[in-house]
Image (cartoon, rainbow, N blue to C red):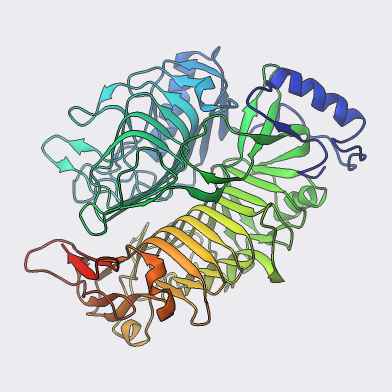
Length: 617
């Protein structure tokens, strides 16, 4: 039952689910879409059997039932003072098509998603709708630690006055907190003002395929990425606001604040796989098709749909690497229910077009020193919605994509959507360690919102003296790899090493490690390195920040590329956040130093090559 063949069908916006369900049922009984017999495997239940961590609501569900479930989750994983930041609880709230007059606060490790074919089939009509408040009302903390949550595939008619004139949806979050395929009837605020305290700091972020009919307020966001969106108006922002294929984006302006970096079209991308339910109650896994040169949001996507008879729903309290791999070997797609999966072997993907989709920030922990996901030399694989976590044993890599040299397929690229990784954070497992978080060896792979984090703080306090060792966040060896929204922080050597040809990054945010000694600078490590042999590479909005808290570290350059590629790195910057030391140049030997200024606060330095000048603020 391969993704591009048996048990699947192309869906256009005109094809509704009831008729489609009949077609798939007949085809499932006899032949696949192209006339080949179906693979022999046990038919999975449809509707699936969900664990308690996944709640499915319909218009018939009482408001009290929804509110109780949502508030119970928020009590555990939400509220003030970063409550739940390293919780072991995971939640996914899925809403069938209909209208819901209910407010839904979203805390840590919580996903809220509509189950319609398009966002407008699930509507939140309440005053606040689906919302995320900053996890700390102290304005110097604000949303800086508001991570690991998501909002997807619905329309919100919210009209609450959050910030004194901004009426609509609040999503005051930082990294690993995407908003996808959402229609916002009014305004969207990405930072929160608390009376008497000011607007809290925030460090996002990523939204894709989002329509905002009012104003998008970046507020205090230090940096942000929007891909394939449609906005009526945009305001605010600070160091590095990157817009790709976005209608209503402001014009590029190197330097700032705010710095706006605008790329008119999204060269090639696909939206994240998602789940829908038809009128008869059957579930399908939708895989949007790849689009080239896209501009603006497309709330109704073209997609391939897979009935859940061909989708295995894994549960963390029952499944192991062995049971999940058995289903993958049979050619099934896998949905990982919200939970924590402690794995003694990698999930092995060896069939083309396979989908692994996590719900509720499904977390995969390496317990025996192996990768948690390994993708073979096959095209069209989709990995989405997962949090990869290092374990207690020496480990080479958490996610390995491809073996040796595999070119991939330009017309059928692999994709990573909302793939997050961390080394440190929760106290368990102890002694978390890995050499590389993500390594991509194959060609034609597209990343779409990655945050790869060596913890600067954890449940026991601040990280010190090289705790949570990890050398690199991501190593790219494959050709023709593209990243939309890449954030990576605090690794002990180069954060990014890019060795493949024709790579492209649209938005990069990083922080150098806080806890290192001066030796870090003398070793010549950087935030973003393109190999000296690489001939073609481009990047837009590349930011390297630093806060050396332990030693006065001197780094020569935040970004290192072959001299011939300097003009292909657009609007790079370095930012002194606090602490000691400096970064002497933005890129290679170009750009002024970022270091403490004459007054307290951050200092940003942009290198604007087309203007042949630096901008220092």
